[in-house]
Image (tube, rainbow, N blue to C red; front, side, top):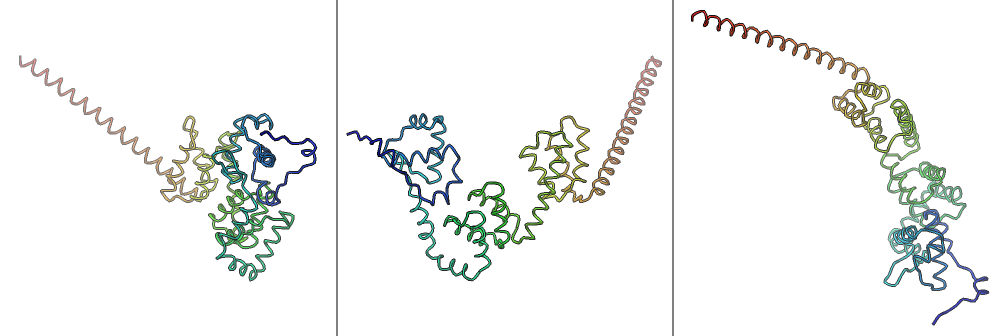
Length: 326
């Protein structure tokens, strides 16, 4: 049996989307995949079959984009694949389960923590009003509470975390989590820690730009080249005064690579050279050693030559004596 929709019914019908979708998930879905998801919601209301080619034509997207979009939606728990097709996951039910079922033992503890810590509650309220227009999704509260506990951020750092992500138009959980992880790994807990971290990053960025300019890399540095510089600055504690000494030594080599420069700087670090003066003294000492070795080799070579000449004369005289005896 084939069912058909009456045009009038379609004209005046509506497709409902829960508010939790806008509060929690909208920012995480790329544009083309969002088109696919919204159209799937529309089709599911009429229990229509999903055909990849039809979706491609209807949405003006390549077949590959449709397949990639469905995989994204499945991986991120928007749809569930079964033997006959796809099932749209109930986002409201999932959110409710995440909020209450896994955290039954912690809910009382969490409520007590928020009630005791008024400054933390005010920070969360500020984040809600400033960056979510007062309608922050429920799961954000659990995430913020988790970041407070996991990274031991103070309230100013937590607000700064959301400010940083908001200013980069990246206020979605994966990005916020990534930044929080980076700050945590750099042992940022207070606003003073964060300020020092910013100063360090600003210094690092200036050094990266200066190195790129000196090496003529006008198109910018690759991710791997930046990683080398971060090691020199952050791990070794070297500033541009020492790094520039290494850069100048590349003039002796044709087409020097970052690996070549890294070998030089890593050698200095292993020798515990910490200042430009120590590096210059080491290079001067090595230069003198190389000169002494060269002179020694020259003397040895000269001595060997004279010895060969002496041996040749002995051989010559010995032959003459033999002939004379004859």
